[in-house]
Length: 153
Image (tube, rainbow, N blue to C red; front, top):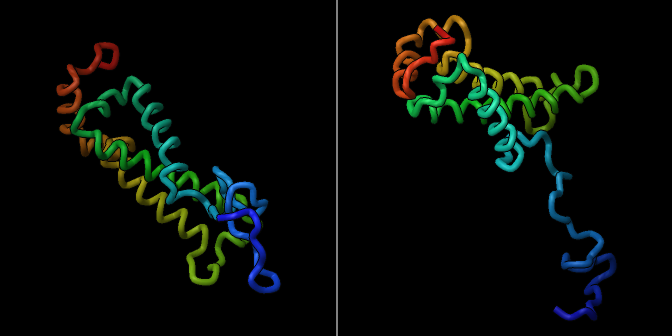
């Protein structure tokens, strides 16, 4: 493409090429609503969630292979729910409860993501009620990774 471009009709904008002031640059976030469906936004948060959970000695059983897939599903679901909560939380007044044209209210989007994350948390034994229900799986996981440390009883 040559540099001597001229518009074909009045008001035509120049092509989007390097150096064009209207060209969208790397890292553009202008079209992002909340980022909960963006791998680039969700994955770093999910990695932090996994790292933080595995750093808690009482949750060491989550390192067992049998929990690997569910742990990552939970981390991504929780990251999405956190992003949706931040998005809804920035809305003034009741706006989070109003349906935008062709969409769902922000509060509803957040609630759906939070329910998904909580269901996965339950499967990991992260809530006290479900920890007892999954006690056999948790014990098996401790065995897979070499047994529970003595300090944890």
